[in-house]
Image (cartoon, rainbow, N blue to C red; front, side, top):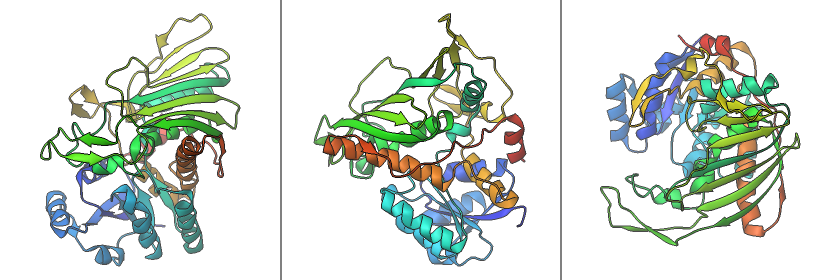
Length: 377
């Protein structure tokens, strides 16, 4: 296979700028074209990043394109990814991959029949901080992981997003929007999940937008906005996950894992960097020694200060896996297992019972310093 894959992007909204901007950091990728149902949006991005603007049909027929990145809204992920596969091209999707296990299995069937690959964000678990945590776990730093607790909570999206409607509709909500980051990192650190149980609720049936340009509009809430879940892993570890858009403030850490010999404090899985802390049986919590992982180096400014952002690392790893003939870390099996976890959590909350997972997967291979450097130009 060629040492560089031609990349097309479908969906030219805000997230597309991340892929256009960061993909040049990586080997094996060359973005050639973009498309959107709004041709003006495609033309704007094409001019901004010196690529070709095409209709979706033209992009899917473009022989120079090997892999298509699906950046459409979540409800469109399945039909668009299906069209991409049917056109004979590999797919890399933004999260969530699909909104049901059945949709994911249909993509798997088509991909297998055509010999194509499917990958999916999030790839933040490949970040320097989370790979440092992975190394510490693999080296036995806290012994065998037995339990843990994760929290991702805020007042919601209507205070900052210009069009927050879809966040509060079926197929979104905090578990499907933010859960992928946490579940992908838990699979990275612990492995696959066996069963889940959950309580779900919503604090309001409507929300009032306070962001511009639609401040004052009322939108409906049709999906749970507070989810308190219990995950039992194949390894025997049990982890609680609370995801909510009904919390104004809190003092919970993003992710804590507890082992037979100590505790591990993992930074926000939504980001690549951050400080990893741990304690042993002495209960003395200290930051782990820093390491020179390339995906932990700050490369962007943010309101919170310098931040490491290497989104598209998962796409680059997928491209390398196709070129080298190995397993991709953001693989279909792992992302579909994540979808199974999230939809089973919602099902448990609706039906009031534990739900056994229908899928499983392996832990992704660790991405150490040398492996990460090999992905960069």
